Image (cartoon, rainbow, N blue to C red; front, side):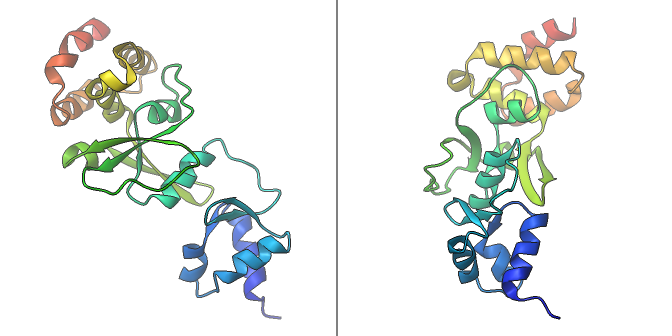
Length: 201
């Protein structure tokens, strides 16, 4: 017996914890069924336009997945990227994202966002895409994130940037050639040079 569209949506929800109207539409199913399934208690509304099974476990990176799904050009950066890569001791209560300079500010009230505007290679280089529970998380690499912290040291604090640099080096999560490459892109080579020398000494 052929499955109904509603049954197929619920089946998809088991493989992919967050569903949007775009996911359903892409498969030729009616997005209205998401609302009906929610009203029937089969799905829960996690956030505007995002649904999951009622007993779906909350993943560690749930808020990052939500932001990347709802803001297509968002790249997780700075404090949120440090936390993602398990570097330093920062526990940001906002999701830090990078967007291209001329992009409109997303109308997202939850989760709260901190936005860094970047242009050219400073935005497009160093993006890693990791798939978790069927959803993509776009996040800057460790080396790119460190140089971003120095670029935005007035926003995140020089102490945070230094702690992250030392921790990443001790955990062997960086290659100094990569750090130098991204420092050049972010125009923080001279700022970082004395700190890099101290760390590797």
